[in-house]
Length: 87
Image 1 (tube, rainbow, N blue to C red):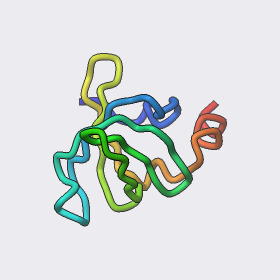
Image 2 (cartoon, one colour):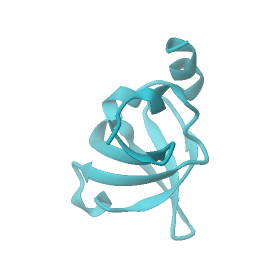
Image 3 (tube, rainbow, N blue to C red):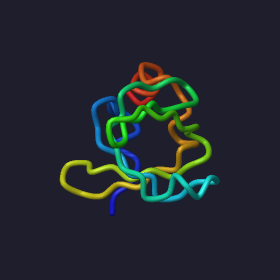
Image 4 (tube, rainbow, N blue to C red):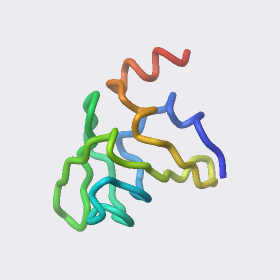
């Protein structure tokens, strides 16, 4: 398992799995990130759009063939800010 390099990449269009959340109904939900704000992801799950607060969850991404786990609080930026910050 790797961590962190994905925090500097574009996340829209990536498949994500919620592996931990303050709301247990989100755990193990898997979907496609459709949009991102500073505080939330809009995820398409089974043809429905659902918004989840980043700070409430831990996410798993496939990144360069490896499972990468990221705490949502590490993603609390707009995508363009997050990408600029790490460059």
